[in-house]
Image (cartoon, rainbow, N blue to C red):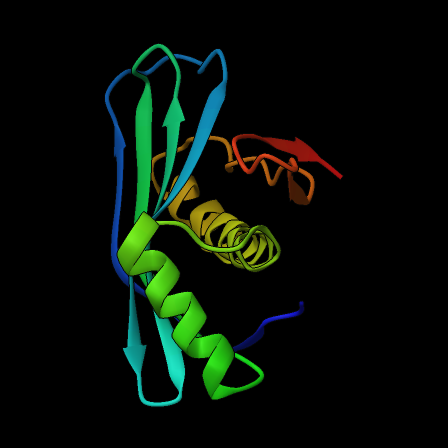
Length: 138
């Protein structure tokens, strides 16, 4: 299923540089913090973190994405699934995470430049495995 994304806004942003060293790598972590109904849409609250290793720096963005499912039944399934299991269907989660990754990677590139950190790498498209427990590049 393709998700119709109707909006994405960043609500908080932070970038810090702790050491004047070249980072050994960047760890990207995205999490969905909440899913709630907003009229005929679902509102996805998320956090994006890029940690520059050996504690060189941190980039953190928080935001909200709005999605409009194809019908009321699908919206109810999304909201119920989140309430009951704190989980989204894999196809919806993939679409959401890839859009968060793209948007935050783009915004993060500008933010990282301010403190002279390399831009957060935009990894390849995320594809969840069948068990929904891990991800791989597509």
